Image (cartoon, rainbow, N blue to C red):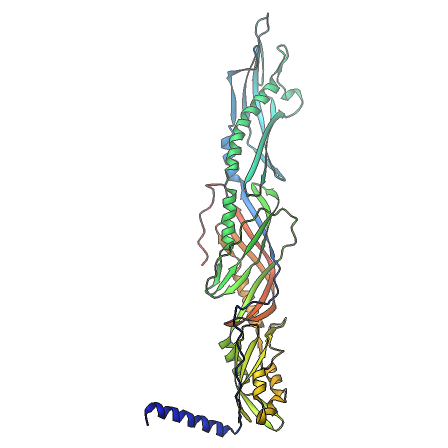
Length: 484
């Protein structure tokens, strides 16, 4: 006898002896058919998350830049300016540092001007007359006001319009400069000339403001929020931003605060690094903001081989008595059928020997307990339980025992994931971009039979904010060390 024939003979003898020693009837049930095609998830949709998006802009460098762009001294008493054929003036202005205030869509920059002026008038017959003011210790004063009105259009471009006006600081004689004899209102002409000179400077400022790369800044933030963020070696956060909403800004000292909102569909996924989101940057959302709420879709995966090990260990000593007969559970093996159902192969011995198949839908309750409450013997198994095995089909003891046995508590795993997520969701996403979260609860919403694992979906609730610190060009701090 060859070696291969001897092996086959020994295997057959062992099988016969094993069957004989058990003394039970042999079960010959076919496995359930697997449904071919694309597996479609059937879990309920998760509402979008609404995160706070506080944006801060350090105004100090911008104001320092404006101080250098607008001269502190304007005009010269040595330079005569012809007003008309008979009138000339000269003036010299000293400007105090700018003060800044804000209103919706408008930045107001003001300064107090101190000036001196002189006017000349050449009448038709009489000799030229002149007069001056502010040439002593006390000079007239005026209020210079620059207003920059801006808005962000649908293409994320900053549109601005600047105006300037200069008016006497008070209506008293102290802040007036008029050469009465020559009928020259030096105050009006000096302030008009000063406003005109500053308007030319503001035109330059407008051009620079319009060139500010706002869209590039927003796209940079948008791209960062679309990239997967590593939480652990095999756990990733996808923020999945959808839209940005902006509210009126406020200021505190030299910092502009712009409260914005982010609508997103964040989720935590396991495994290899997922692909980045590809949501387009939409025009700014200007609707009223709803209350912020962070809803992160997370999932706990129970691979079928792990579930097989857990369930087989838990039921290894389970015996089922049906009438005067007893069978023992030796092994449980769950497998997906491709249509949301799971097949459980039940290996038994005793009064009956072989494999039974039951089919049902996995469920998870609010406490995180995974069960299969609708588990029933498969039609193929029921058809096979005839003749000497009819007693198995006529009893619901096996079905109930299976329903009781398939019970996996995922609550500790879910809570561990929540704590781990909160620990890793407080971090710097990029220089000037900081994510902070508080996660208060984790609520299971369903489970589905994926091709490789039972996937329990969980909504992690809490509050979240992404703080954005913008800086004028050239004023950004050095990049921080990247978070691993």
